[in-house]
Length: 522
Image (cartoon, rainbow, N blue to C red; front, top):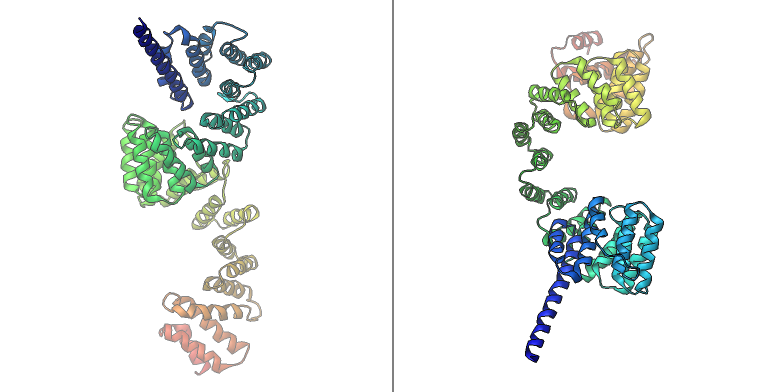
């Protein structure tokens, strides 16, 4: 009889031990947000009367966290009410939160803490958890209770995790990160903390650090497709380009039937300059969803990069024909570029104008539009665009060069000279600023010749004669001007002849140079 009793005790002890492990396992699954697996475990445990209330409580928590109110109420309501039972008090507190009755919730939570004399870390944790997930309702209370749980059980990684979540919800990423670091210091295989650390460091643009965090997480949870995608993005920003594609491939493998994942492949190929592959990928995608604007965008932009302007423009028109889409400012730029390449002046102007009216106007859009207007010979519009850009963002050296050329073509030589002066200051080693300053001043010097262009042609010659082949035509003009300057203003025929000979060296058949040679008797 004693032997049977002993064996029975062993069996009961073993059952209770396994049972307790299963409850703990279910709680771990909940923390890792593996809710479906947790539901299976908890439903199996409900058959034991002693554990039914606990199982119902955690089942209620799952639906509480998922925001499925009716299901949460169903399980919480199956727990017998008792003012000395902390499980009952916790469930009633959570039910009060679901009813948006914060005062009643606090009353029940306070009683749960009181009946355990503030010495049960799990009760403190559950109260804090209820205030944090699924949405923060009282972060001050949450942080206080969770800090209390940590104090009672300072080696419990779960408590640090939720305390970190509370700080993060309270917009204190630094304190949150510290708590997640505490969690992995006690349990370096606690995957949720590694994931949260990765995301905080990524948001702080510490991409090398976040990539390392993702590696720790994925070693423990290799089946999370979203984490693989985020990891790939962080590898890209960390400059680890050769590793990015493998991460995205894993993401795609885990999303075999997910159309969004398939489209991400096309985006990835475009990002890495594999434009032909991006086009093929997007066309394959369109066989399943012909109205996907992102696929048409990829085809349009990729064809532009490949200089397939007709195909790119056709894809652009398909993109704009789709009603439901989120427009990127670059959509206007690429469409305008393609329209310009296809000689569609009306749409070129239209797309740039639309871009300038969007919520995401940028400096590049102004520059692109100004250059396009310049190519269309709309000089006055060019000056308006670049003057507007200058007042908002400031003009770059190329911008002021186009501005100067537009003013020059409008015969506004004074403003042209001002623009070319700025260009020369920004690009002092380029001959172009000095050349166009010379042209502008020469055009202003028409009544009584004063030699206004002399210092600019002098500087131009100094720089440009390093490449006489490239600068041949303008150097000839510069030498002829210098010859005239020395002849008319300096009365120095010898110097004039030197410049005329230089012009003839570049072009022996130049008629004007020959006439000057005869005039000067060189």
